[in-house]
Length: 301
Image (cartoon, rainbow, N blue to C red; front, side, top):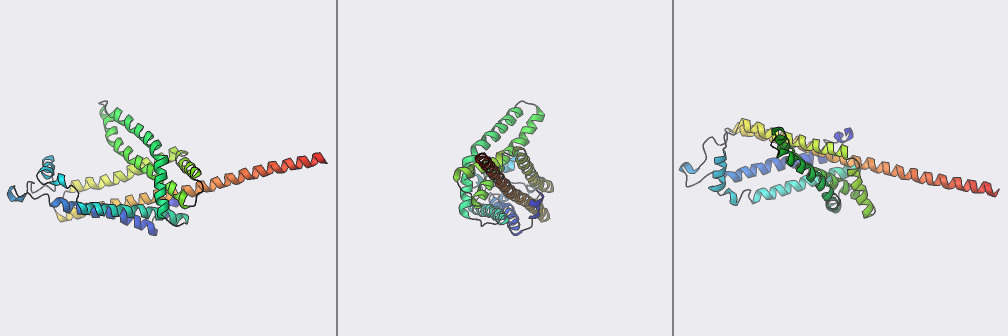
């Protein structure tokens, strides 16, 4: 874990932070510009059905006006936002893959990136879906009991469990693609090793996945909450909110990069341990053979 933190300012780490910040800020800015076109209604006095202070106090009625009278429900995001979001996400995913490949000393290939994703779906989707689905069902059942404390646990826990499922599936993808990129031989052996690397360390990986999801979601929520408290009544407040979003995005990207490097370093350590076990097993077999030959030679004498 300490070694994984050391590469936080390397080349591909900067790429990852820039890509995630671009995804958060550029797409948010484009979406805001897109929404601005729905705020003006020709049928209402002054060209808008929204109050003048709607940036500071947005009610459910205002949102309904945007959806129904502004036509937002027919085009909620816009084409430019979707294209930018896809480009930024591809940049995020590729930066993470290049970071792992560079750390382990092999070339990042699109083939291994894509086949590793298929591997993760084949060997990880069902078991992870069962575990996290059961956990989600338990939380939902507890939340429906009417007990206030359990209701809050379900309200906060269910979204975190959902995000943790995708994080764990991504972790399985990282382990699979790294194993392929390093030149694994034998499909079944590759699947077995990649599967066991995740499931033979359930306590450690569960703690890292849940802790990482909670921390990243908490930082993003904190930035939004502070922005909500500031309001949007002036340009300086909007700039302050953008800076908070940028800071949150950069920290979250750094944490994601740390987790990517940690998975790669774990794979390298696990591979070393497996090789040492094979060497010890072969040495034990050779010792038995030599001892048998020695005993056989003494009997002949």
